[in-house]
Image 1: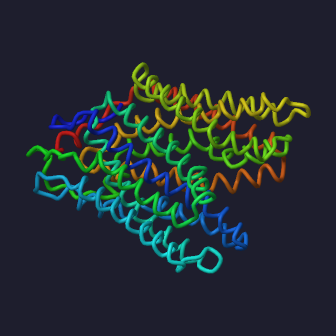
Image 2: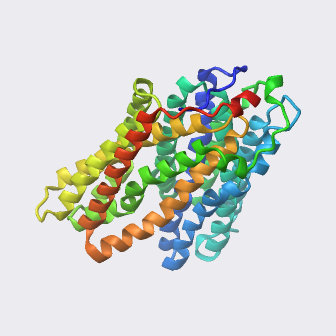
Image 3: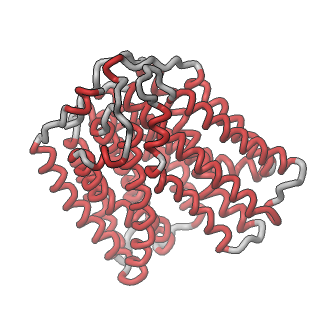
Length: 424
């Protein structure tokens, strides 16, 4: 059961949702540019595969941001002061990201940053933006938990997950489209402008101060989070519920290619179709959270993932599976993932302590990012050694186990620890 949020002044959901959606779209826009578009552009410019592969370093700050989350949270929520600094930190991060991209765009426009000879510098600047974006995300998560009441957090996660899909579409296909028609410099300048525009809903907000009861002696820390059983349980259930998806996510493209799907069709599938499926799943997840709040929504969504993974394992083992069926199952998997992420992160927002929401939620996200890195490597090894059917079959079995465990946990109706809200 999530910790009840303390009674305090909040912004309305109509103010909060567009503001956080703009931040999350910006973050995923940069993620897609660095991890999808940049490797393709570097390779096209003659860079080695090793150089293109270095773009994966983008994920390092996201996996390790829990290390500096307490410092960010202490600055965001100063002790003995009623003010919050979330908006200040978020806007500073957005302006810095826009400034980095603006500088890169101007340099490229003047011929100072060609891909052929300065790919390393471009990669380094984008990795600097990863550090800024990951730090900004700590404040955004804390802001979201504080400003959305528990019954609104499902829609907050729709904004988060849905914004991620939109950002991925813009930073992947959209960025490459601009590069192909107008050049790299124009694409970078357009991205800087987009980040400024996406920041406007946050700019017009006025963040409410904390109540006297919320300003105390608490110092946000990782140990405070890890001493709370709810956080530990949340971490374990997050890892258990996500491991199947993380094992197979990077193998879906190779699976389709090896079953005869053309590269053009694969691009369409991972572009428009996957975004549509993911957004649909995210909205269904928001509705599911309202109908079955808490961990009930999570086990239902994870159970759906287990069923689709089992179907994909069967299709991978078949010799003559129709391509439309296989692509349909992959699309259904994207929808199930969108639904599950909304349900899971909604309940984890409720688990986060009001005293240090940014730290607690960052811990969950960092664990998922590190699992994604390890799962991608393990999934590739499994598929290479024993075939796709073994990789997807193991993922389905693990996800079914997760469904049973999470359902049992939801049925226990674990009582919330009240001390955090009492001192918040």
